[in-house]
Length: 70
Image (cartoon, rainbow, N blue to C red; front, top):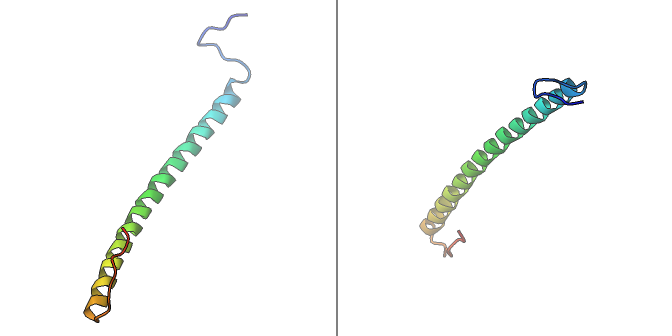
C-alpha cells in the first residue's frame, strides 16, 4: 500500500502531539539556558566590580594587595 504525502496513518495524530510537546520542551529549555547565561554574565560583572572595590578599599587602608587572577 502506497501513501501519498497528504494521507495520514493511525499513529499520526499521536506522534504529531508527541512531536509538538518535544518541540515546546526544547523551546522552554532553550529560553531557560539563555536566561541563565544572562544571569551568569551579570554575576561575573558584579564579582569583577566587587574585586575592584575590595582592592581599592584594601589599598586605601594600607594593606598590601596582590594581583587578583582574572
